[in-house]
Image (cartoon, helix red, strand yellow):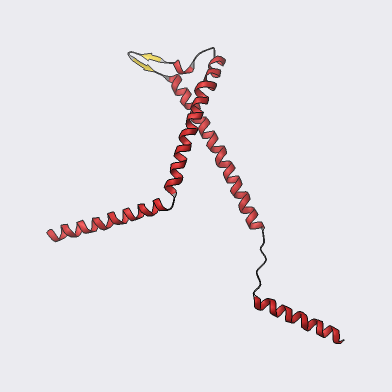
Length: 150
């Protein structure tokens, strides 16, 4: 019974070591760094979009719908207050972020597709080896010699 427990512990140690090694490989590939940069830039971008929605778009929409400040729109149910105006602001915020990401991904895809097309359209001439160049030179000399004898 003790041997089975020891074997199970050893097996679990090997699994954990494999997991840790896989995690180290993941970190070493740079994916974590790319992800961290994406999160930081995304956080900053979200602040900009939130400011755009809260400070510019929502007041304009409020004026259009009759001078209401959307962020203050609430419904009272008993003691509870449902802030649906804040929800509307967050929906607008989400739609703007989603649209910007859509445009960004579309531009990146367009760039990479164009780059791939350019790479496939460029036909590289095969590089001739020294032996082939020497044989072609000999062939040309023989042709020249043959034509001069006539």
